Amino acid sequence: MLLIVGLGNPGPQYAGHRHNIGFMALDEIQRHPGFSPWTRKFKGEISEGQIDGEKVLLLKPLTFMNLSGESVGEAARFYKLEPDRIVVIHDELDLAPGKVRVKAGGGNGGHNGLKSIDAHLGKDYRRVRLGIGHPGSKERVNGHVLSDFHKADAVWLEPLLEAFGRHVGLVVAGEDAQFMNRLHMATSGDEPVSAKGSAAPAKAKGQSHIRQARTAAKPALPATGPMADMLKQMFGRKD
Image (cartoon, rainbow, N blue to C red; front, side, top):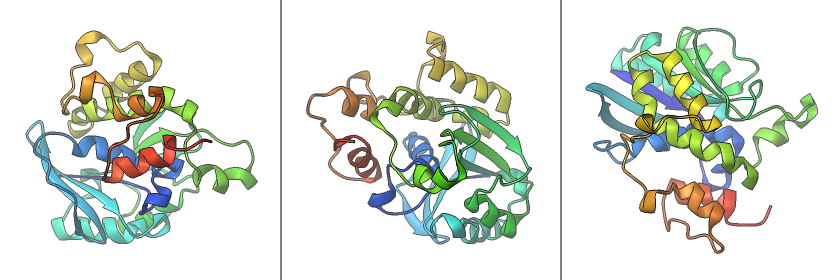
């Protein structure tokens, strides 16, 4: 069994924040056929399913970012999971927007969610670092991570999240280098046609919810659910 954790802050007011890109990526995975609806457990929301024959538990801690370890620690202890069976998806200031790095262990880089998880699990779990860019000075960091993605960010955010959902099986299989390469090709527009077959359900008219929201004159947003809240935050109002 693999535990995949996405980091973020709960509530619609945070849904479109850069700090919540881990939640956004987890929503793409949860769209795979066979995953259960989100339910409350381990101080978070969980969904269970299978990816390429491997049982996978998705977890969104609802403790707020700084206490993420409380939720992750409870789930890890309940299932008796070793750190190498835990993957944490989080925002990364020190990577350019849309860049992805996967690593096992290492420092927390000042990320409060990782600090909390380190305190409960140690440092040997795997991390998927999703770049959101640095605002340029330390004083601007909090405002940067706790603000919505701009409309212009949809150019890279949309293909990144879609590719994450398509290729997460590579993370499950431990093919981290190939996973990073696939996401790089997707965000740079170089992904071969053969790699674009989605394991997740096709979206309406071949477009993602994000693309529809970005290109429509009057965005037609989903009526309910976490993705609806996120899109309304991101694209349903003027910047």
